[in-house]
Image (cartoon, rainbow, N blue to C red):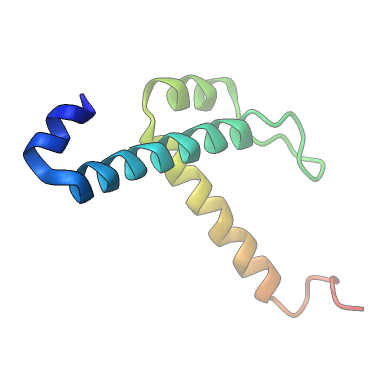
Length: 85
């Protein structure tokens, strides 16, 4: 398959394509791992339907991971979070 991309897009195109596919796969697996955490800070992370959707629809865990990272960024920027010493 990469040979056909190499023939159509050249070396740089095939390299970028394979790198992007690899990074999306890693983000998909990381999102599934985050959703399936049993307990995070005392509250359950994901439900059964979220786990099933994340296995069937790969963009869902990537979007979920971006959403959670944005929530964490907002929490850390908040001055009333009791994290400052």
